[in-house]
Length: 490
Image (tube, rainbow, N blue to C red; front, side, top):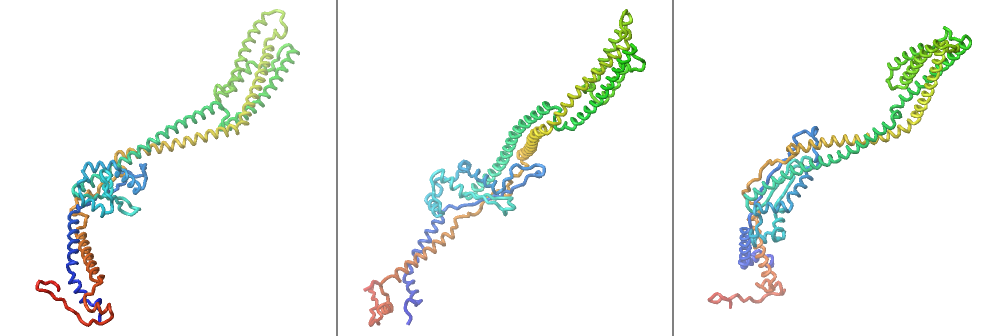
């Protein structure tokens, strides 16, 4: 025979007998849940969609100064917008989170939501920060839009706060990019000014080096070698001319000593030498400037010959008038020939001395060329590095100035509201039917638990089957329940 514990009829009887123990807790919990659901303030959510527009001028023409990834830049702007100062200003402008809002139910809601209510401005700031949600739309490779949502108790205020937040994001983005461009431009301007001063100092150093070492510069080595070769050839030519002049003077002196006069076969020098030097001067001027050494020497010799001719003519006039003069004096042509030869020899020796000095000077320049080239290379390298740095900074400064102008004209990357904040028509929380259902289920659970505790955990026996099962012996008699006329037990 089945036991009462397994008999479905027994359980039905138990629950029927204890129906009020189930109904009363269920109704009470349901009513309490309904009161809570009705008392909780409705919360509305309004959202706006903001599109990130790329700059309108191609980057090939104007390179933006701010190349921070969008997600990082958005997070920075979000931190700036959600600062305590900005949120408190929005709270005061829209009279949000007043202390009277919600009362006891608001505190219960805060506890149910897992947040600890804090008094005053601190509580308002924390609630405002928790009610704002900023999400980036799209995957990491194509992040070009984001949404801003705000949750509040008044649908109209919620919409206005969301629009205000969108405006703050747009303004802060423009302000941040403009400040970034201005800061970059100012920094490059200062660096460019420093680079310019450094470059000017090196330019002056290069200029002073060239002025101090004019003629010994590395780029003049080839010219110095050619000049040195020319001077050496002139030394050889001058040596030949000097030897001829000395031979000619010796011939004149021999002829004078033998005959007392210069013969017609002897080159008497002054007029012929003057013509030759004038032709040589014309040739030199066709190739060199007036300050060229050979030009200066030739002009000096021409002046000396002219002076010598003038003196010879004067001496000749005096010799004709003087009586008792010697043979040389009576022959002024022979005397002038000897003097011209001596003058030519002196000039050639002077020229030889000057040429040797010039050769020594240019040889020293050639010998110093390697060391001079190393010094000039070091100086020039510093100058070239400084010049390149200045040119790079100048190009970056111009690019930063274009980027700054681009940002000020709002032609760069910017935020644009794609969908304005909507007016919420239905609340997003709390879910009142769910709260009532939870209360109903909680009441049923409490009632069933109470019945189970009273009926199945109680040590009393309610029928003979329970007693027999507990004693293990049969029951001989059962006394029924007698009710008096008033319905009471006896």
